[in-house]
Length: 208
Image (tube, rainbow, N blue to C red; front, side):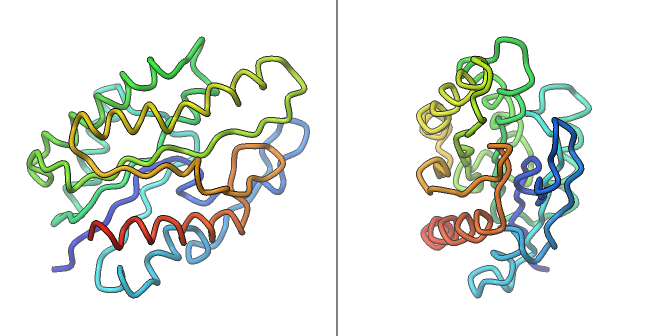
């Protein structure tokens, strides 16, 4: 049975294409699965013999509710045996939660790491987890709060790096990769997916 590499994330994992975003309304489409960064990784020689699972979902925030954690448990258990679970979340929390900051995000993400490490498929092995800091947002800045979101998002790398060190997981900082974003300042462009895949592949080559 093939080992699974699971990528658990939001719309930037799933492959939402916000080219149709206009006047605050989402009328976008989706990139073809093979053109998302997860799809590109699945086609790489490194992961060709593994079961690559794109577990992205539009709008997903860092799970805290019991039902959300059960859903995460189900994703992991039905794709056993698990070689690696990569987690990239936090952008939606930052943009949606009232007065969210990196301390709040850290607390929420810490709960996810502790939950994953408790699962029998992971068995407390930090080496089976990869925590990925999301890219910085590039909101247009028409309102002061948008500029504040952009500033706060620059803290993803430092915050998640500290969590990865605390729990002994692997870490990658997508904020350092220069990912092109669409005009909404949040979602990857097609080129962004390609560049993200190239950078993450180098990370995976070192840990798989």
